[in-house]
Length: 257
Image (cartoon, rainbow, N blue to C red; front, top):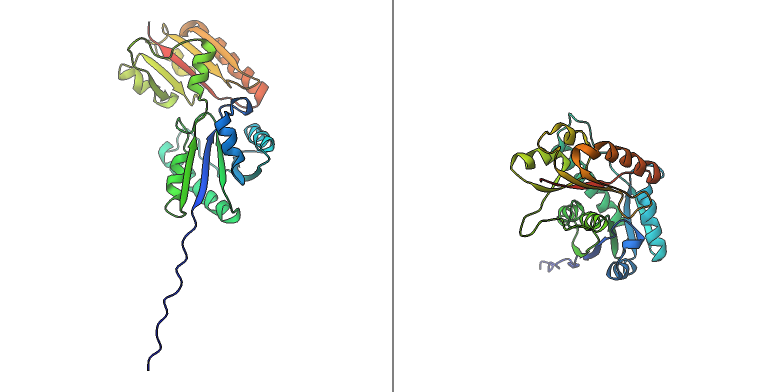
């Protein structure tokens, strides 16, 4: 008589809670909602870009204030040369970061926090990477908004980013020429790498610019005026921000007359 076949026990796959928290530019921008979210996790994961990374130190301070363990992961290298395919380089970098998170989740049980500069919904890929990770790990993702660089820029310059009934176009410095060619006349530019473009685009030299760097940090810098008149001031202020904080994150509003 054949023995009965016993089905193996199927154990449910545990769902990992991951909380993505916008922290603005540091502890001073951590809202009560964000504070509660950080305090609710068991561990925070953070990538480190280099030895003495000042952005990591801000995350470390926030974790210390909330008595939460910080686990530091080496940030995979990303190709940044001008002749590198940008999309391909970012894709490879994202894939490597996703792999690192998968390993870290396996090594650190419990609820996990990810602290995002500014707001998770604006020019940050954390949520995209978690979507990729969902194919391998069952996740329950929560998102807490943060104070964005756009909000800080508007507040520091005491302005409304759009004119009455008019649109606001938000893009990167790399795609600014495309926006100008399409006729955009009120543009916020983020992820600034070079300022030379503003001096070589004759159509924008007479436009107004409201620029800011490291908003909310000790090295915060602000410049406003006609593009042709303030480009040198912006370049100098950018270097001051780097000298004071060790890094630069800047953006600006560009508006036609």
